Amino acid sequence: MKIDIVSIFPSYFDVLELSLLGKAAKNKLVDVSVHDLRDATTDVHKSVDDSPFGGGAGMVMSPEPWGTMLDGLLQEDSWLIVPSPAGQLFTQGLATELSGASHLVFACGRYEGIDQRVIDHYSTTHRVLEVSLGDYVLNGGEVAVLAMIEATVRLLPGFMGNPDSLVEESHEKGLLEYPSYTKPRSWRGLEVPEVLLSGNHEAIRAWREEQSQERTQRVRPDLVED
Ligand code: 6GU
Image 1: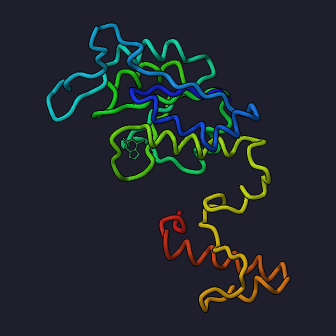
Image 2: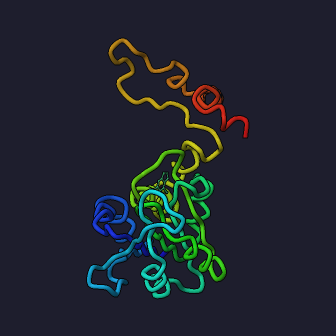
């Protein structure tokens, strides 16, 4: 998978070297490039934003540098992902879908967002998704894109040492994961649930299923209703 990221703060993405992509890039699963939107500006001040038509607070990112940058990056099979608190919710299902793409281009907006015509224009030629991490506001898309990339790349075939660990985790079956325990059996007066020491695989499976159901019902009843 090829990933291009466009941002006015390219150094946000230095952390990708650390864990995830160090590993994924070494195994040639993913090839990430980060681009500075200001490189696509033409004025001496390298300006990327302007005041909104219609008035209101904040600044809007101008379409021209985005057009220049995205024209240079998008290929026929590219998906354009625009992080936005006004987008569709990012879910495990969407991460799975993104992990099937061959080229993802992430366009990180700041201020009050990107001129809507950028999204409308590329929607006529490409798969364009406006995506939100959740119901709260970040200052820009950078942190959201880090999360989306991490959730997506770990699903690429060959990323996980043991792909079984993907099947059992939270959200894969629409439920939260059951609680986990390791040694010692007793810690500060708290015991590991007896059933996990029983060696009875069917009983363990049933207990975990029940814990998953109970935890989801308690913490995220909205997931059970869906
Ligand atoms: Cl994707 N962007 C911004 N700026 N804020 C957010 C978000 C994205 N998702 C949740 N809040």
